[in-house]
Length: 550
Image (cartoon, rainbow, N blue to C red; front, side, top):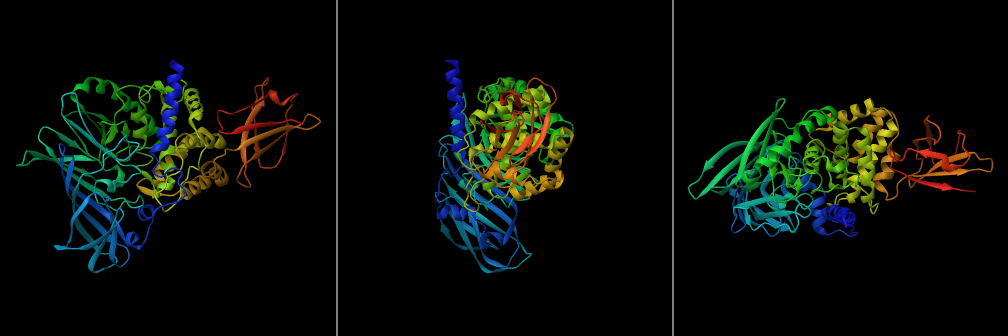
């Protein structure tokens, strides 16, 4: 029965990873997809500088009202811009220079008309007033929306997660990953006796005259729209420090003891990630773990935690190797997103593999730091059983479309393959750190990643990235003997001019042979009586192996 439950868990995890993706296998895209995913003049004409969000949430009615003051710089002369807010939310008014602006709504897009042309280089701002009942998630974080629940004492316990679905689900913004505000103020008023925890640092707690308290948080570094969040509960707070970084924890009161025990994993995690990826990228805003009524999410400087204060993924090991039960999946995975996803961000969600592949690989990096390289490779190899190879990892550009959920662990195994190709661990870790340092606080594309690794390794790795990211099949290493018992190898791939080294040895010998293999048959100098004596490094390379017998 235990194995049946493990298999069911693996299936369910794979399914929910797929469900998290917004558009799935659709071949046709709607106007709403295009309005959300494309960059037209109404979007490219301005660059968002800051958000100043000031809202009131009534937990009993599940009703939200307030405004977002949006400051932006004009890049191209324009008299019309696009912002985004879900259709079910009401636009109360949009104010510019004390005058109400006209607008048109089209799906979830709001096209705002100015009564004059805004000139290139000008700094402008509007106040966007709105209200309504935001969408409630059916299964957060796999689908976007609010989670309204209560703790054991009957007090409200509320969170929101909108990755993929869109931040415009609950507040007006330029809902495209290519444009991150440089800073954000998040002010949330909630009934007295409750606390709101958002991104960044707490600036002020202000009692109001209506039975509410306003909690003001400030983010001083670039932040992705979907990372801006609120968490409402009867929280208790405790804190710690790592080097010069503040560590803050907000948990339900009944879970304080368990949290203090479980969150001890944060410091060794920081030791590891500082060493391998560089220092924490949001030191101005601090680091927080915040207990939430859903599993977790990488909300920048306010990482959502709902894993039940247990190791594994809800107490299970996705790899089936036992390695995943040595550490808390949500603490490690979601915190790793601070480096990959929050600091280094994809400009289009078609390239979300940049977030998820590097972060999924970071799980094994933590394992290697804490338990050794053997466990790390074992963990990655075990995860291959939940890879679907169903769709390309890269989605369709410009239509708000993510690729396959394989961006997690096919992507992680691709990066481990890249490590084997480089074949120099010191160089590999330097590259990982340099990659983050080069692109931190930026939004990038797949081409930027490939160019970085090509330039730093002085190799053409584009065909390798292309095969793993844009095709469902993985490289197949074909082996055959000729009539004289000579061994030949070649790669069978969708990509032309594919070249990748492979490591192997005679199973009876200790010396490892490394050969550069292409799409063409290559004679391999090795003494073998039969191809079955050949031991190939299948742990270091995510490949298929096919033996062709004459």
